[in-house]
Length: 73
Image (cartoon, one colour):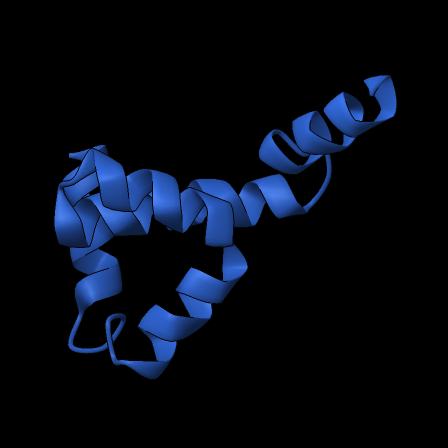
């Protein structure tokens, strides 16, 4: 039982490179959707959501610059 709790905790709050992808997925999800439900779902999928947005053209037409301006201006 204790081992299962550690595995769940490790997946939800990883301490390695996966956390970077999850935070970026949070920022991108909030920029496009403005929804807490989608934010949580995209956090769980992490890098897979970023690949989806990339393939669907979400980062084209200057959207990367718009996202940076949205969060840092």
